[in-house]
Structures are given as C-alpha cells and as structure tokens.
Length: 433
Ligand SMILES: Cc1cc2nc3c(=O)[nH]c(=O)nc-3n(C[C@H](O)[C@H](O)[C@H](O)COP(=O)(O)OP(=O)(O)OC[C@H]3O[C@@H](n4cnc5c(N)ncnc54)[C@H](O)[C@@H]3O)c2cc1C
Image (tube, rainbow, N blue to C red; front, side, top):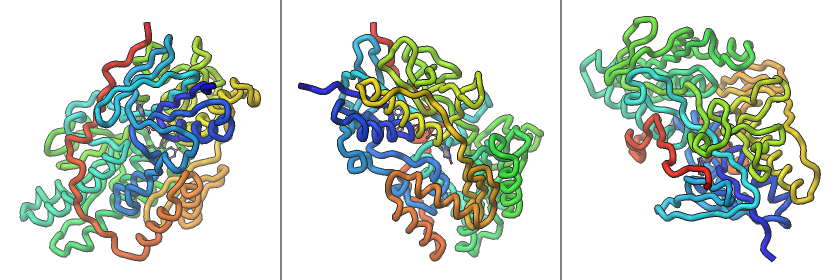
C-alpha cells in the first residue's frame, strides 16, 4: 500500500521544522517530501556575519540531506500549485519540470526583499536577504576599499569608503555594526589608505531597532555611535543615483554602496495562487489551515497567522514564529492522520538577540535587558542552539576570528547582476481549473 504524501514547499525556518516534526510524528503514516530551491536550510540570522567575513558561508547552510532522515528532498522551485487536482509543479536547477501530487500541503516559501517606490533604488541598491547578497556585499566592500587605496582623488576615495545602509531593523543594524568593524580591520591592513571608511545607518523611524524593546535600541544606538557609525534616524533616501544618494533631509551623500535592509515582503509566489491574502501573506486560521482547503496549510513569513497575543493582528515575520508555526502545521497534519489532536497557534515571546560584532550585543532573554559581554554570550548561545546543524563549525569560526587576523579577499563568485533587488516572480503559478 502506498502512503499518502505530505509536500512541504520551502525549507526555511517553517518548512525545515515542519519536516523534522512530521518525520518524528508521522513518518509511518505518510511520505514526507520537502521541495526547496536549495539543498540546504539557510540560517539567516548569521548572514551579516558572513558578509563581514566572520563566518564562512557554508557554516550557515545546513544540508537537508543527512539532517532530515526519512524525508525525501527535492531541489527545485515550485512554479505552480493545482489546488483542485492536488499537485505542485516545479522546475529543477537543470531546468526540467516535475510534479508532486500531495495529500497534504504546507506552503512555507518565506519572503523576499521589500521595495519602496523610491527613484533609483531598484537600479542602484542591493538587498540583503540571502547568501548571494551576503557574498556579493563582502566582495563589494573589499573591492571599494581596495579601489579607494589606489586612487589619488580624495572625492573618489571618500565615496568609495562610504557605505549607506537603509533600514535600522535587526538586519540593517547588524549589517552596519559588523560592517564598520570589518572595514576598520581592512583599514588596519592597508597603510596607504588614509581615510577611515564610514558606515551610515538610516531609517524613517525615530530609533534604531524600532520594532524591539526600547532598552535594546538604547544599547544598539550607543554601540553604533561609539564605533563611529553615522546613525541618522528620521531620515531615508529620497533618490539613488549611480554616484550617490540624496537623503530626505536634502543632503547629498556620494557613495558607491547602497544596502537595502528596509524589510521583507511575502514571496510573490503566494499572491498568485488565487487564495485570499492579507498584505501579500496567505490567510490562514488559528490552526494554520487555508480556509476552504482543509488539506492545505501555510506558515512562516508567507502566512498571515492570527496573533493570539494581539487580537485582530497577525504574527510578525520572525524566525521564532516561523519555526513554531512549522512545528504546529506538522503537528496538525499528524493529527489529521489520527496521531494526536489538532491545536491552535499560541506563543510566548522569548525575547530577542542582536549581534553587534566584536564583544557587543543587545539581548533581552525572557525580557531581561542585557548588553556587553553577557548579551554577547546569550546571543551566541542562542544562535548555536537554534541552528539545526554545523554548530561546532560556527563556534570554530567565531574562535578563529577572535584569535587571528580576518582574511579578506574578493572571490568574485557573485556578480552584481546576479543579485538584483527585485526578484522575479514565478510566471506559471495559477489555481487549478
Ligand atoms: C538577514 C536576516 C536576518 C534575520 N535575523 C533574524 C533574527 O535574528 N531573528 C528572527 O527571529 N528573525 C530573523 N530574520 C527573519 C527570519 O529569518 C524570517 O522571519 C524566517 O526566515 C522566516 O522563515 P520562513 O520559513 O517563513 O522563510 P525562510 O526562512 O525565508 O525560508 C523560505 C524557504 O523557501 C524557499 N523557497 C522560496 N520560494 C520557493 C519556491 N517557489 N519553491 C521552493 N522553495 C522556495 C527558500 O529557498 C527558503 O529556503 C532575519 C532575516 C534576514 C533576511
């Protein structure tokens, strides 16, 4: 007898943990298939450390094969869901097309860079949402510093060593904090470069980390300013040009580097399924079920999951929510196969960690505000626990970085045109007829 098949689309925080939980609860009752664009789970919170050269890119890429025994991994990009006939179409990395019939479906495709209608941004900014962007930024920073060292023109030198980060959420704050330390290290290795690279952090919000506890903002703000980051709150980019950015306060900043961290929006894939969405996220009930399709579940950034702690609102796009929701979707699918009873989504906020590079971090585990070394210890401990694999390798990179000079070279693996800010949406997604 063939077992019914559960297909999970997307192996991020939600999909990976859904697969892991299903394997534990229901591998005897269902075949579990995980469809993902890559053959690894990407631990996104350490991406700023990859861009700064602290952690090697492979460390935050946890292989799906080997860590999810009993789960069939299919590498490909879903480009169609036929909800009536219950199959998902996908394109493999080699360009072949395939179909996966399902009995239950979990949609957990995550999110992509958020764009704002600001002239020039799509052309001249780079986002920060995945490994290619982090690798590109690493090379780009090294290249700008190397070119600045070669030129005798002070204006060019200043522009090449000015890095503008837009968005002071956790991503932008970490990118700017690690970035300033990274370029200071590069400067120390380049005696001919006489100008200290400058990182700017902009946001329309009145404080850094606007979505987090105010005490974490105070800590992050203090560390950034002490380090020399030019923190400009209440300010954004009005226009981007090939040579610089016009700020909303009227100042023109010559730069070759505009790093776009204004947040994310749900993957456009979900908007084209013909299902109800809220701000681009799939509407689901408290059991993570898509209304009208009891066999379809959605979770993570791609789903508008009702937040029981804030009635009328949906959960924020965070790894904590995505991971818990992935586990719950798996639990409720197992319940639909007769194992356990289905549950509604509930959560307790465990607090946040923001790594600011060096010995600095801001954290509030269980809402106890921490800064300095205690925050750093909590932050690193949290990341090690939260990573589903590669822990000793990540810890080894941290230890090596603390003890040795950081090598910084341009590998040139990711050209600028490979990381456009606007990602294409799949063309062939439609509801089944
Ligand atoms: C730089 C950065 C730092 C962050 N730091 C933190 C942090 O410190 N704490 C925190 O709580 N949150 C953090 N976040 C947010 C957090 O990472 C997201 O909320 C979380 O990843 C959402 O999980 P997800 O499973 O919904 O999506 P993702 O983790 O993005 O996973 C989606 C998966 O779906 C795959 N996929 C997409 N489209 C398709 C398709 N068509 N077919 C097949 N597969 C597809 C993708 O390849 C990916 O593997 C950070 C985000 C970024 C970008």
